[in-house]
Image (cartoon, rainbow, N blue to C red; front, top):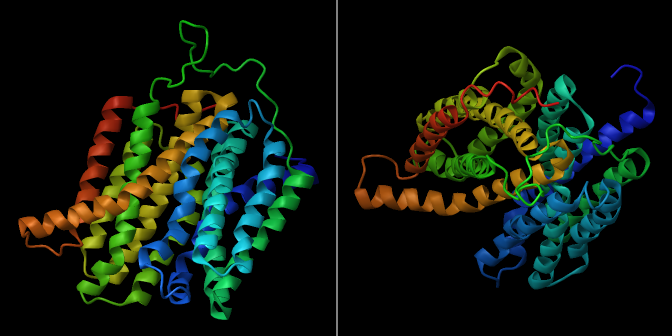
Length: 402
């Protein structure tokens, strides 16, 4: 984008700042032990809700925001109202003493999170086209990796001063708020959208255009499998005697490198690979999943990094597919679908992993019971790759949405 004005740069940073805020729940992941110790008389499962509750509450709000933002409500209007609420609800536990009060704030924070989460990539889809769209979607992966580093680093540092100080990290929201206020432009509404979904017999666009349900299931199952691998990793490392909690943390940190690498590789992949783009990446995910069965932190770490790269690139391709299904003018609705499927898959991961471990114990299989969910995930990946290839064919248009 030669000759880009200063305000245009601020607008791009404002869009990426929304992707940054969408990963705000990661703040508490390194500080859970501090919160458990801060509320010794509360059930452990209730304390864990401080981490999981925002994602659960966000579910309906991702759908609501995806349906109305960009069509009935302007992006800027919504964001200038919701982002300050996001910051206020995030910081509010600093002033509280009871866990119930903290959970109420986390629920309100989750509602704001659900309103914000679809908008970053939705704005990319509405603002850019062709190769620019590939490039800026790829860069969004880098922002996801950076957000993970920043939020988890802040959480780890601030929890050393006391549990209340952790929530002060949400003051960083002031930066995105200023970028939105002074830099974000409202994208122009398409006047004659060629990619709009076909209307029904009543003349209105279909609520569920063709391809929505398969895409929803694909995203949900991929997120469920990826989350399951993460949940079982520390147990595999410990039971196989190949390391401790620090080893597991080191392996998980390679995901940041993988996400950033995916952001760099994605435009190149779109240019070079013209057929079966999604199935190829899902097959790569299946291959790297088997690395979790090897008793070597190095092999697991390399597999985790490459797998995260493939996963993030796949997410970009599925974002483009959702945009094509709904039409560019309904990009916020498309991203609402992706975010809703994401959170459903993450929520199901706990139960899926538990069921797989139980099945391994009940069948008395000659395998580490914590490796059984990993084997199941590899099977899901391979089935998804085959079904997507059969259902969508070569699908050469995934990177070519205008």
